[in-house]
Length: 277
Image 1 (tube, rainbow, N blue to C red):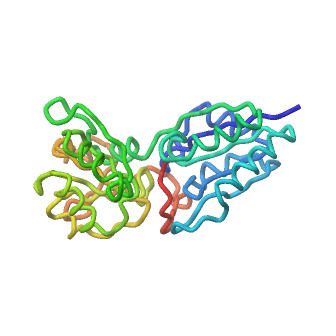
Image 2: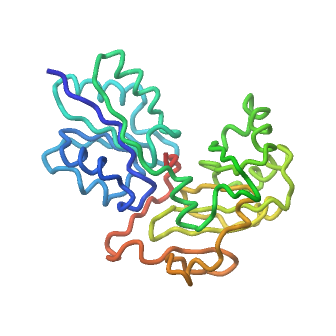
C-alpha cells in the first residue's frame, strides 16, 4: 500500500507560527525531507524514529537537485511511508511545490498541502509594517529580486508602477543594484522601504529607508526580505511601547525581543540564501 506525502509550511522561523495541523502531521511522520531554513525548534518536533533528509541549499549551493528530491519523495511514499516535505514559509510561495506536486501526480502518490506563514507576512507582522493601507496601497505583490532582470523586467516594471506594496524575496546584499532596478521601474527615490533580516527570530533586524538611501543600508544577515511601497510609511514606531517586543538599535533598525524565552533555543540561519517560502 502506498503512503502519502504532506507538503508542509514551517513558517518563517518562530516555531510558534507553525500551524496546529502542521504540528500534528509532523509528529506522525515516518520520513521528513526538509529545507535548510526550517528552524531547529521545528525539526526537534520530528519523531526520533523518522528518517530525516536535509534537501535544502546553503549560500545558493544545493546539496541535492530538484529531480533527486522528487525521486526520494516518491520512493519513500511508494514504500508505504507517511512523508513530510517540510518547507520554510509557505510551500506554495517560491517553494517549488508545483514541481513536486507534478511528480507526485505522475507517480500516483496521494498528497496534501498544509499551508504556512510566508516570510512576507511574518516579517511585516514582526516589524509592525502594514502590507496594505487604504490610504496608500490596496494590493500586494510577492516577487523575487531575480525577476527584476532579463525577460521579466518589463512585467516587473508594470507591477512596481501599479502602486502596490512590493514584498521582494531574496534581495541579496547589493542594495544599490536593487535600488537602481526599482528606480528603473518608475518608483520615486522617496518611496519608503524596509529590509527585514531573519524575520520572527531573536536575531531579527529591520532597517527602514527609502529607495534613494537604500544603497547605504547596512548589509543585514540573510535570509532577508525587502518591503517597498507607501504603506511602509505607516509602520508603527511605538510598537515597543505597546508590548510588541521590538527594541530600537539606532538608525531605524529594530530587533524583536522575547520571541524565545530560553536563549539556548535561538535559531541561527547563518548566510543561507534560500527563500523563506
